[in-house]
Every structure is written in C-alpha cells, then in structure tokens.
Image (cartoon, rainbow, N blue to C red; front, side, top):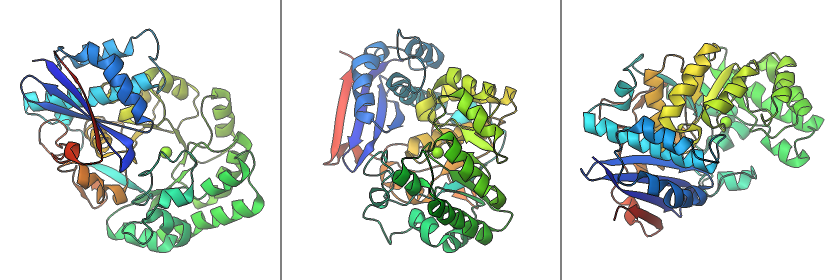
Amino acid sequence: MKVTGLETIRLKEFPAILFLQIHTDEGIIGLGENCIGVETVETFLHETVAPRLLGKNPLEITALHETLHQDFIGFSGSAVAVRAASSIDIALWDILGQVTGQPIYQLLGGKVRDSIRAYNTCAGPGYGKGSSNIDRNRKAQIGEHVGAHFEDLVGFLNTPEELVASLKDMGFTAMKIWPFDEAAMRSGGQTIAGADLREAVELFARARAAAGPDFDIMLELHALWSTPAATIIANAVEQYKPFWVEDPIKHESSEALKRFKASINSPLTVGETTGTRWDHWRLLSTGAVDHLMLDPGWVGGITEAVKVTALASTYGVPVAPHDCTGPVVLTAGVHLGMSQPNIELQEMVRAYYFGWYQEIVTELPPYKDGKIWATEKPGLGISLRKEVPLRSDAIVRWSRLD
Ligand SMILES: [Mg+2]
C-alpha cells in the first residue's frame, strides 16, 4: 500500500480551518485537519511534507511520525511543521483503522471506558468561524449569529442562568466560560480595573449560583494576562469554585507559571497550544500543572498525543483534549479519551457540534447526556462530505505521486 496523493481543502466560509485527505493506491482515504494560520500549514504540507510522504507506506505511522519530527528545524513547539505533521498523523491513523476494520481507539489498545465526559465550551455558532479570533473581538466572535441556536457566548455574558439551565437540559455537567477577555482587551492585560474585575466575577458568581455545587465551571483566560493580574482574577473567582483556571498567562516562562501557581488555590490547566512531548515535559516539570490540555492537531497528532498523555500520567496529571477547532480534531480526541486511562474530559462546542461540523463531515462521535463516544466504525469513523471539495468557496490543492 502506498500514498498516492495529498489533498488539502480550505473553505472561504471557514478560513481558520484546513481539511486534509491522504489518498492511497487502494482507494482508502485518510482524513486530517488543522486550525488557525492554515494557509501556511497548507503550503508547508505541499512544499515539504508531501515529497517525503508520497509513495510511502501509510501504515508505517511511527516511522513517518519520526521522519516528520526529526527534521533539521521546526521539530518542537507547535510550529507549522508540527501542525502539518499532526494533520498527516491523524489521517494515517484513519487509514490504518480502515485497513484493519477497527476503530482507532481499538488500535490504541482498546477501550478503557465506554464514553467520556464532555464539557461544553460556551462559544456560539459564529465564534472562530470568520477568523482565528486572535484579537478577541467580541463582535467578530459573535458574528452574524446573534439570536441563533446555541449562542452560548452571548448567554454567559448576559443570561448565565438560562445558559446553565439549557446545558443541564441536554445532560451537560460542565461548561467553560471566559468573562474576563474584554477587560484584557481594554487594559492590554497588564492590569485589571476594579470595575472590570467586579463585573466579570459577578458573571462567574451568577453562573455558579445557577449551576449549583454539582456542575463544573472552567474559567478560560486565553493567556491574555500578566502574572499579577491573572493572580488577582484567579483569587477573586476562587470562592465560586472554578473546576480549573485555564491558560491564565503565556506559559513560555516556567518561572512565571510556578509563581502563579504558588499564589492561587484553584487548579491550573495549560497545554492546548503546546506541541510535542518535549514542551509538554517542560510544562509538567514545573510542578504547577494540575490538568493538562492537548490538541491532537497541534501536539503532533495521535501518535504524539499518546506519548504526552503517558508522560502526564507519570506526574499524576489527568489530560483533557481540546476542541473548539474542527470535527476531525474533536473525533481524534474522543478516540484518545476512549483508550487512554488518564484522560478525564473531552472539550466540545455544542454550537459547532450541532451546527457547522455537520455540514462538513458525514457523522460525528455520538453525544448523549453529557457524554461522547466513538463508534465501532473503522478509523476515525467519520468522513468528509463528498460535496465539501466541490463547494464554490473551496480552495483545493493536491500533491500527487507521478
Ligand atoms: Mg483554551
């Protein structure tokens, strides 16, 4: 069996997302994905990855993983090289699953649980659709979708009580919100004004009052804050029992991370933007990380995610795969969650899951009563809808074996 083509598909409607299909001489097609800055990933895939992938046996996943990770440069961090290799790796596991007739979780050692607890990230349908949201612009994040189904960002900013009730109705037992982002935009993140602090803490308090003690609420800070400002925020929210405080600061500085953790009592999570086991090892070795996040599309694919998850287990740290990106990465995370013992949670965005994800792929891992699971279908168990590459806004590129 050999790889005969590498096809990338971008849709102008979703400029932050790249889909990738690895074609083989046996007609099996593996599906991969990436998110944010994807024109660059696309170029890197065709320029640098394709020449080393075409003609190779797609079932030699570990060897290809090593080939793509042992380049002269770009081998660590979540650099474009790691992200391109991540998309390839997910698609290769999809191929292996189809060849063997097994779901990926089975190939990773089989089920350790029948489903994984999912929490809802309270983005709305338009969040991340039109841009990568680097500027955290609320208007752009909400887009044209105000009033649409599952406008959960508007919900947590205005009516957290209704939001919690609606999530509970669907069986969710946890959600993630980010009421402090606008304050960071106003101040630049170095300091937080008293009124901004009180206003955002009040939103978190209202969410907690509505949720009661048995519904978990994650506080997302999107790495927008200085260490002292993030410390003030975390300590002000502590009495409302956040399940974790996520990405309070940019975590490049291990010393800042350790100092932050020493100044708060709430659990800390970081890691979704981190690539490879080497950078995750640096994070874990600070001793500051209570929960580790990883993104299969940014960490180095399923192969690297398994290694990082095992590494986290040696520190006694549970892992929660990231979503809020695209349907393929969500599905890859669910296969990890079904098969890796120290995975505790799967992130999902109900506005995406019940919205645009269904326009892109044929099916998704089933969700019910706060849980998500992978089916017994081979590989990822999902495929790109046939009409997607044919859409008028599709930008399709191929690298083919001669
Ligand atoms: Mg996050």
